[in-house]
Length: 118
Image (cartoon, rainbow, N blue to C red; front, side):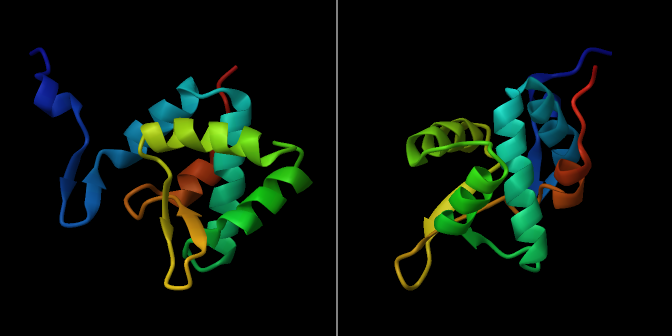
């Protein structure tokens, strides 16, 4: 039977995304390698921080250390793409510091362990 558009979409139920793991992995396969590397750097930082969001500054420094990006502008361009796919979010914390994070419904370990198909 053909899938309807509604059945193809990721559905949100009670704060978790049904089918989010496969949707997120499909997005990873379509991203440029640097975008994937940046996302994996964020996943690594977030996992090391008990799955809590991390500051943009920490994320930027990690991307520079791993030679994913060399400037804020490059990282902002990558983030814009990741935001548009809803696999990264950003907000200000109570102190007004920008924090970035992979949303709760996307399995961080799957992102971290993902390898580009050959």
